Each structure stands twice: as C-alpha cells, then as structure tokens.
Picture 1 (cartoon, rainbow, N blue to C red):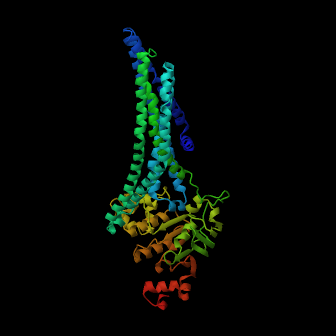
Picture 2 (cartoon, helix red, strand yellow):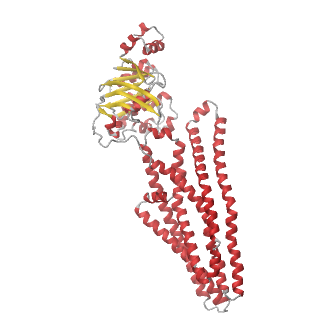
Picture 3 (cartoon, rainbow, N blue to C red):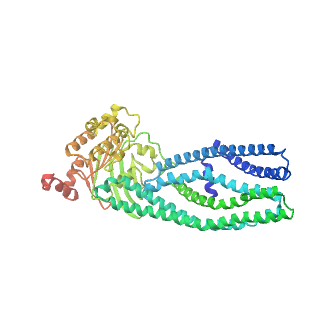
Length: 580
C-alpha cells in the first residue's frame, strides 16, 4: 500500500505536490477548529444560560459563526486543491500509460485483452484519482479528529474520556477483521469487471460478424453471464460490509449511551458541569465516527490498492524488444534482406525452422504456403515485432537487433489483408506515416494504389471521414487505401501481406505495374496465394510447416512440379505444361 502511494506521489508534478501538502495541512487545521465551537458551547451553557448572564451571549455566538464560516471556507479551498492535484496525477498517468502501450511488444498485446487494458485506463485510474481527492484526506480527518477531540475531552474530564476511548479498540478489531476478508473479494470483483468490459469491447468490434451469423441472442446471453458475475461479486462485498456495519454502529452508539449515562452521574455528583456534559455529547461522535468511518475507508483503500496494482503492471511492464545499447545508426535503409538460418518459437510452439534466403535491394521476394505455415511471422521478424529464437534477420547486412527500432520500422511500409483504418479523413489515413505530405502527393500515392478513382467519387473526396475500421468502404477499397498509406512513407522495404486479395484481376495488374515503376528504390516482400501476384518476383518461397519447401523463380518452381506447380495448375485450371 505504501509503495503504491509513493508511486502516485511520484507521478504528481512538483507544484501540485506542494499544493497537496497545503491542502492536507488545511485538513489538519480544520479538524482542530472542530473543538472550538463545543468549547464555546460549554461557555454558553455555563456562563450564560446557567449563570443567567446574557452579556457574553452575542460575543460567543459571533465567534461561533466566524469559526463555522472560516472552517467551511477552508474546507472548500482544500477540496478544490485536492481535486486539481488528483486530476494532474491522472493526466500524467494516463499520458504515460498510453505512451507505454505505444511501445509495448506485440507479445504484450497477445497476452492482454483490449477490454482489460481499457479498464485499467479508465476505472482503475479513477480509483487512483479517488484516493488523492478523497481517501487520503478522510484518513487524516479521522485520525486528527480523534486525537484533537480526545485531548480536549481528556482535559475536560479524563475519567469519562478514558471510559469512552476504552471502547474504541473493539471498533479497530472489527475493521481490521473486515479488511482482511474484503481484499480478495475486491480483486475478484475487479477481474469480473475486466471480463465484462472485454466481452462488451469484443462485441462492439465484431458486431458485423455477430449480425452476419445472427448470434445476437448468444452474445446477449454471454454478456449477461459476465454482467451477472460482476454483479454477484459486488453483492458479496456489500453483504460482507453489511454484516460488519451493525456491529460498528452498535459500538459507536454505545459510546453515546455511555456518555449520557456516566455523564449524568458525574453531574449529579458534582464532578461535571452541564456545559462540560454538552461538550461530551457534542464531541463523543468525534471519538466514535473516525472508528466507524474506518470501515468505509478500508473498503475504499482495498479498491484503490487493487486498481493501483493493475495500473502499475502496465506502467512497469518490461519490454523485450528494445534498442540495443550499442545499436548502430542507419540514416538511410537500402533494402537488402537476409534470413540466416532463422528459427522462431512462440510459447514453445515452433513457427519457423532453419529459414534462410537473401534478397538484394530493389528485388522482389514472394512467399506462399498453406495457412499456418509461418508466412506472416516472416514479416513480423523482419520488422522486429518479435525476436528470432535462433539465427538472425539482417537488413543491409546488419542484424535487425542492432538497428534502432525507429529507423528500422521507419524504413518499412506495411499493408496487410486485415486492414485497420482510423476514424479520420481519407487524406489523414494515407498520410498517417508522413504528416508532411501535400495533398498532391497523397493523390499520387492513392492513384498508384488504384484508389484515386473511387476516392474522387466519395461525398467529400479526400476529406471524407472514414468510419471506424473503414466502415462504409468495401474490402478492396480498404486494402487500396492501406497500400497507398504504405507507399506514402516511401519505404525502402514494402511488405504486402495479401494486400490485393480483395481486388479484381484488372486492378491487381494495374497495381503491379505501378509497383514496378515506383519513383523511389524499394525492395518488395509479397505474401500472397495468387500466382498472378508473385510470378514476376525475383525469388519465390514456398513455406510448409515453418520450413522452406521450395525456393526459386516462377520458371524454376514450375519445373520442379511441387506445391507451387500444383497451385498454379489449380488456379488456372490448366495442365502444368500450359501453365508454364
């Protein structure tokens, strides 16, 4: 808990830290003011009412009013300070978490659901804010109120004060027992909230699939199950709290009964004045209420602790893919690629095994193979989304692990079959990798990707806002915008992972012609299943079960009469001889 509080403190800017300390000091001072009015009430009863002396009345009342207004004004200022300070911390944390997630490895996103990460960025962060804006000063309030009231009451009548304080350890024991049992339930409740958010996020992202398969009722039942599990976890916590609450209330109210009964006896015996009795009845809550409030505060502290731990997991997650300390500087990428005896595993599963090939700058390499043969893993290793298990991937003769990530990935343009477009204009999506592009340059790359014609027919042309993930565009249109986006960074290596799978043959031929005549040098890495997309490549690789089964040019592979030859015959529906 203390470590998490220190972590929050370190994420607060220095000016806000000073103001937060002032706010907590105000909290201490206003707790001290709490005993002033009961002390004045004692004088009011003993010196005015009992003594039948009205002279001090107006002075005492005015002083009580000033104290009350002053205390409330200071409390208002304190709350303003605390709210601004907590918002500063959350702003800093949210920015740092988002930055952290930008640079987290692909493996991190393989292991964490989007809904869970969104919960950490929203609900968990809000509990961190709640600690700074409410929980910490309420703890100080409870402690200071108990101390100041206890000291003052001790000075008024030490016997009755000790009797009241003797009851408080029972309250502490109850709250400690409650704290021990409630923490694991808060961890479970937070996990159920994450499950529910993940289910909602997946449903929203995949709503078209749900509708296509008419699975609305199934999804509704699945979400209802998660929702009910979250509700049940909350109810279990509330039930636990409600089982302790009557005990706490009974002990707190018992202090008032003791005050009235014992205080009345002291008055009868002449050991207390009516004014002193009024002080005890007015301040006995200051001994019981802090103990009573500890139950709620411990409840909140446990929720804060659980949420803060989840947020810290994101902030302090270790990245495996980072710049080496001795990374070399490469101002310009040429585009030479070599896979040198590369093997790659994920979670003990062999994806690639002893893959070796080389491509010179400006050449084209094409990769084909059955689903799951490791095609996409090749480009992920090339861009160093993952690191090889054995061997090395070299770009321009340098191991990618010795490249600076910004320079390596900045020289690679990627267009994949699973296109992700942002909720932005067409121009904004194409210029995503280079914000300095002019509209004319954006148009040029769009035309090279065979996207210019349909973009011109959109309602607002290049200023048309594309819906989330490219809603409103066909699959082929999204692929062509993604290709234009990849070309717009003028990459030294262009990766196309089934980029033209959703376009017609005529459009594909146009794109291939444009790719052969790019105005900048570019090595092309093509993953495809269509023979027409790869037959002109300088090197064709056929992957099967993570190994290179065949390698060569179109003519060489056709002469081997292997998987490539069979695929060609199947696609063209002709004999092997005619396919050559």
